[in-house]
Image 1: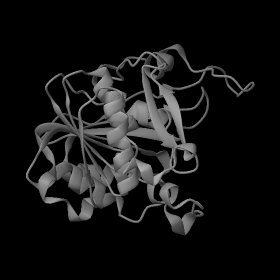
Image 2 (image 1 turned 135 degrees about the horizontal axis):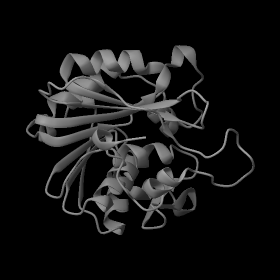
Image 3 (image 1 turned 45 degrees about the horizontal axis):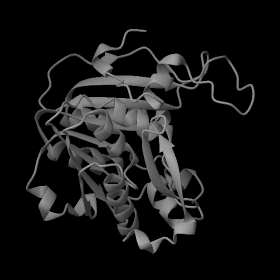
Image 4 (image 1 turned 120 degrees about the vertical axis):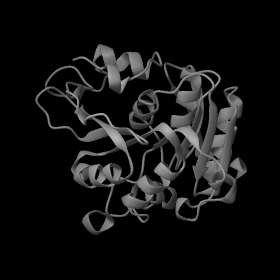
Length: 259
């Protein structure tokens, strides 16, 4: 239950320009821009079913539910205290979210019986043989890979209806691996690099595929997140297009982007 965190250990954070107010642990794993961009890129419509693998405190799935009223929202989360927090956050924001606690490699029976119009995930970014563990266990579970990326993709594809979409956000340096795994299960792949500033290399990518899709691979022009060529102080300086997503809750439609 959410009471596993004393209230003093939680913060209530604004997302989508304050349209969503979501509790997160002060010292554990905290979602930010990545979750909002992931949610904005899922091409769901009202009435569609959406599953998030590894939903954490429910930031991404809540952002999607707010943007598209009438979606059927489901989350799978390994850590029970984060799963409870996701449920609390959804209820506090008048969203209906069914969260199951479990491991995606041993998919709970409830989810094995279902397929969804869209599946999304923000898997752990870091291979720990190449990086340092986080001191907080909740953050480490979210950021340090123990379940191979191949399993995340395979399970996402299994839970997706024919012609449904799978959308992942991941670090750019892991793109070759992600492309390989998604190509094995999905078609109609679309890649969007997320560029910090003009002239900088992409740090993150969004990759989306369609089950049984047959369209040619699309490599979109990079999406620039911040104005200017360098950080010039402690202030927000997102591009206008990015601000529309982060503050106004607009979509990031991969199939329609023209830059």
